[in-house]
Length: 361
Ligand code: PMP
Image 1 (cartoon, rainbow, N blue to C red):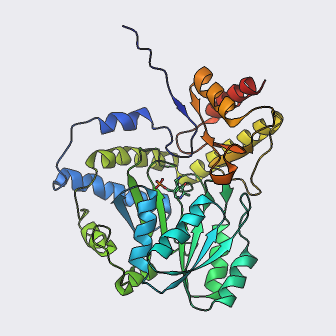
Image 2 (cartoon, rainbow, N blue to C red; image 1 turned 90 degrees about the horizontal axis):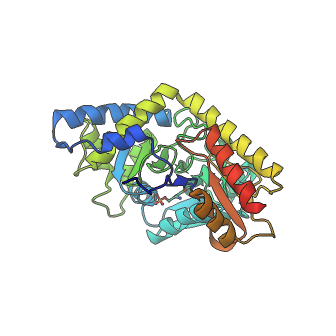
Image 3 (cartoon, rainbow, N blue to C red; image 1 turned 60 degrees about the horizontal axis):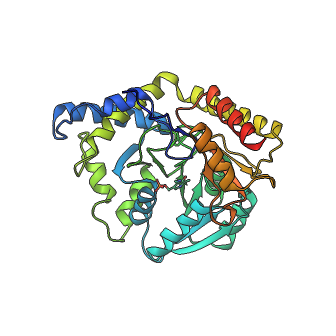
């Protein structure tokens, strides 16, 4: 009997589409993780993850979604009573502050209007006001507003004005937006598998430099499963402290090979081009872009007065099997978001633009 199952076209900023060869890889029989075969795979994965982050430092693989990785950074690098500066320009920047407060950190927050990005001047001002800041928590792409933070220049001024650790949520940026962990002097960066890395959810990756590893030695917050010291020690023999998600790691091996073949510079250029095509197409449809500093990985657009979010969403799903993302928080019903992240090409942009044209006409 002919299958009635249609392709679900995902334009959500996580999860993102998974290449078929990666799905095939993950359907292979499971292997034992304390075997040479797994260690060889994991060695390759670890090396290629360093390439993705553009670092010679260690990259840890954790079994959890991105938020788990964010929490792991806080509990490993800080102690209760430490002061951190957190930029809240949307749902995920806000999350940094909430996690830090949960663990008894003193949070100085810069609150930015949704759709705008923090400026270098605002960061300098807070660093001068609060001399005891131990870490600055940034979000490279604020997914809720589809806005990019100028991590490169902000990192420069943090270094010029303090000794604070520079911590980046790169969850919807790594594998899409230009990023140089070593060159930009980032101390810790987290990403997750289900975005630019073209994988199912379930893994978080954390790059740490020597300053961050030193901070781990000083941290007194309780931890066990996510204790970075255990991961760093296992990594020396391409091993994991606990049973890893073997199936996902096999898929990751395949995905990282695709990334190495395409090369990071080309991937960044592709995303740059995709976001430009998307914005240009949306403007031609008479739509208005939400963000002041639009991201290359996801675009947020105002919903026009003539249609509700519910109607627009229903039309895209029912007629075209296209799933885009709603606005979040107070922007639910006001904006929607279209991702162009990971396994995404020019034709995918044309497809969603055409479907939107039909839905709006
Ligand atoms: N930070 C950012 C920038 C994100 O886009 C997301 C996921 N949308 C998260 C954090 C949370 O990640 P997860 O849902 O994988 O826990």
